[in-house]
Length: 333
Image (cartoon, rainbow, N blue to C red; front, side, top):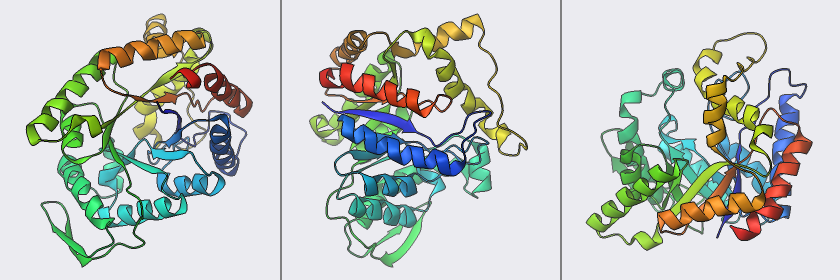
């Protein structure tokens, strides 16, 4: 089975002494170290205009990671597809696939921030239709042969996208609602989920029903499940997970904020309990047992991604977490 690490986001923390150059240098170095530890994949994540610099350019960063690695798969978790023009996205992804010798896994999602859509001039009410068309356009573009497209959202004159990748770029859809699952079952190679284990089982059922309806073999479909994993007492990391979670609620406000990066509000006791329940923590054996339980309930092969990159801890501590997971969990995943 596959075990990956992410989601690398290029964020700085409040009072962070590092420059943006420092952050990205560490990000690229860390990805190379993950390869040396035996991880199968490394994943990035996209948002825009956030005061802490949440990574906006995943394929640029993916190319940089490809340049310092040899074998690790490089996944986007996820590119917010409707914010990108399909031909330009096809070109950028193809270029990364060429540079990496076939190691890109292109994860795509819809996005949810009105600030992002408004600023980039994209109609948010067409994002579902945009994704549906995008999933059909990209494979045509990557053939290297001339193609055209005339849809409700996009119109593309006859052209060929080059360079054409010599190996297939897997396209994975991420999302929480059933519409995203159905869209993936129809047009994508797999699904990227961070749902609760119970909801994840429902997503698999929805996808399998759709694939059976359209005559597609569910056995060829990839399921990638990502969750916060921490090889130690949960209390040690709960504040960092809260910082990671809370920042999403602050993103839109931060787009026009001046001054320093906003401080994360303290956890209430109720919030602390809820955040703790989202973490697969404890000993390596306990994490493996939890993953085995999810796999057993799902009834399908699962590729795992430890969402264990935390922007508010030191680089040395981040490396320690990755090394502990590589030693204690990766061999048994």
